[in-house]
Amino acid sequence: MRLVDFLHDDIDVSDPEARDPEFIERVARPAFDVLRGYFRAEVDGLENVPRSGPFIIVGNHNGGPLLPDVWALAGLWWTVLGCERPVYAMVHDAALGMPGLRSFLVKIGGLRASRANAEKVLARGASLLVYPGGELDALKSFWRRDRVDFRGHTGFLELAMTHGVPIVPVVNVGGHEVYLTVFSSERLARWTGLAQLTRVKTLPVTVGLPWGVWATGFVPYLPFPAKFRYRVGAPIRLGHDPERARDRYEVVRAYNDVTRRMQAMLDGLRRRRPAPARRLPPLSAPRPTDSSTRDRAPAVASRA
Image 1: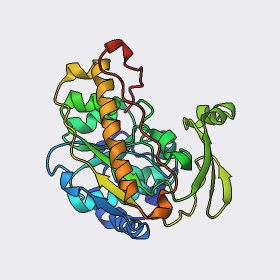
Image 2: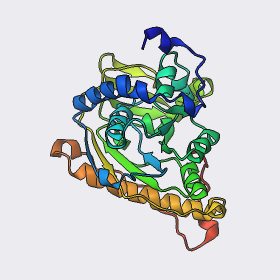
Image 3: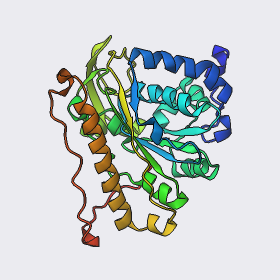
Image 4: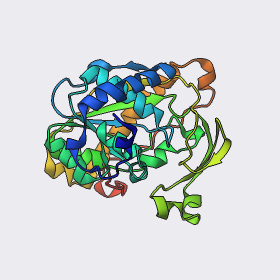
């Protein structure tokens, strides 16, 4: 693999055929194994990963823009499932807009985040990795690092119901301790024009290496060697019911159930950490919607 190959911008970011298992085996997997060692990554619950058939992996998101929690998870996934079995990930336009990084991401299974591309993956019988909280989750403040907050996005649930595939919840602690985000402001992103220019809807101020203090989520950094722990939960099966996927009441009820389960997983994983990492109390998940009346279900976004 030549360096110049990474600089081509003509790769189709919506083509699943661009995934390259040989590249993953020869280049990406060894590199990600090094990252797994650096972060001393551990995982519980690998027995919950389905060994056949498609599924949707849903996780909490950390450490933007480098997203080291994603790379360590990808290395673990390839170890369990192998590089030949196709798993794709929805990727933000901001990452796909970077020459070199775009080619790398697409070769390892990244696709532009869209409902059409997600549908395409599941229709092929492949599995899908989504982070419903998106960049707002990845760039959240340090004080909110142990909260599952998908910002009301329910697209992954609608996909699961429509295609009849299970949701595999995965939570991570440590991924947001590779630096310290003092605060993250959606208002500043709007005022500065950053949100409109880049589609990144928050502007964080971060303390870390090597710059000391910096703003925006586009500055590369040297991550602290935080210890990563992952937990894979039991598959959540919502059934094959396209009609239910169009029922907002049912979708919101499923959203509350999934986020509540994942928050419990995250709280349990956090309690296992050494005492210094647990000094700040966790924030609880959003209160589940009262399912007794249809008109009390909150309005939520429908992005994957």
